[in-house]
Image (cartoon, rainbow, N blue to C red; front, top):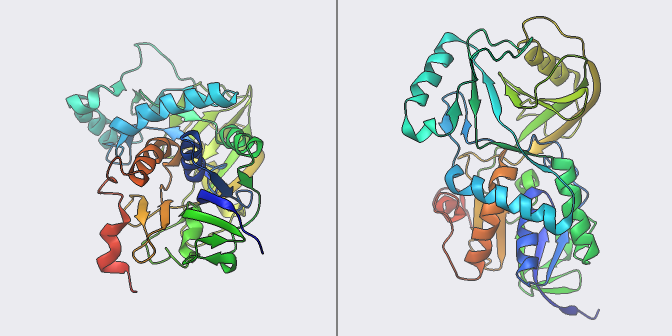
Length: 357
């Protein structure tokens, strides 16, 4: 079978990682092809899409947020202008404390100069209606929301219009790694960005992944919901005149994209704890996806130990929309010899412990 002309990169997966990286490479003039099966089991269209500089029960600064979050803001704004559409929104996070201990932790963090720039108190007298602010409420600034379905559709349109997208699953039986050939296509490098499915990738399944299924609900209600992203044990986010999204669950056992009654019950309990009194809601939609989380909570970036032209750009967990724009630039710079990989994300740090030739 005759080969097509050599291309620079095959990118496997058009989730948020593969989309950002393929976009970065194409915009640099690299001949690139993207293979994707239509986001089956992917987290990208189900994700919250929140860019949050302070996270977790201990209210710590999100990893690499100082560089990655400003870059992401500029990236998505530029992408909106380049592709068209509006899917990036600056939004504050309204954090409702669940206990006196959490409220005290907030007060402590607010005294720390490294955190104070991100935190503020609501104006005196501001009311949040039926939301439960009995232990206090605080704002997190420099936060934002990317609308995942709209952003992913914009990426897909961009790739399709340029003939970059191959809407099909990647078939390892068609890969000749030593010959740099996939299905009749001669390539220079292949980059796997297939999310949690890396656990079945014959080249990268040895890496310490800990995928986690997440489920969200879209609800309809006459209850007044602020424009902020509201967090109290879970999050709610207004996405229409009378609709909002509620998330999310964590399940490391059942790795599929099927919504479950158990998660629905769990999410509605989270919702009930956000309000002072019961509210009436109608469940409009249920969605599930699998996050490509890792054992170290750091992504797996770099080159295969014995195949120098097989690369990984994966493992961003629940923070893909916040981190992938910045790291796609860093990764492309590394490929072209302009910079080193982030030492905490370089997969070579796992070789001694996990790699078995």
